[in-house]
Image 1 (tube, rainbow, N blue to C red):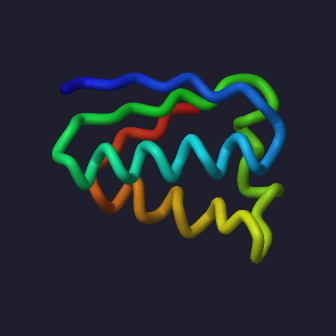
Image 2 (cartoon, rainbow, N blue to C red; image 1 turned 90 degrees about the vertical axis):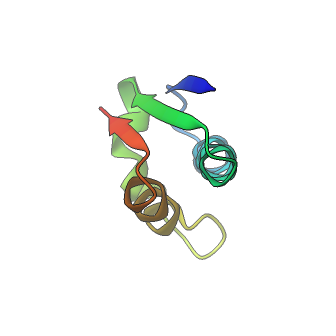
Image 3 (cartoon, helix red, strand yellow; image 1 turned 120 degrees about the vertical axis):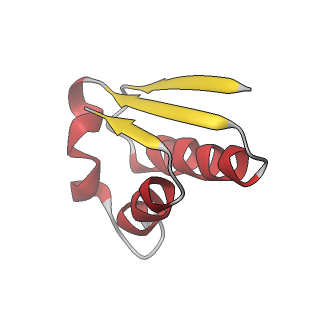
Length: 69
């Protein structure tokens, strides 16, 4: 299945859940593209021990997901 996700929320919890779902879908061999819009483009600033956004984004890209901003 081909999936496109649009993330526009500045909230780290929303971004974290989107990346978790996207990585799960990649593990199921779906093709996933995430488009970061507006305040979500700065997702790296929301990185924390509770919401490891940088790690999830790195895993996503290395698993052949497409991340657009």
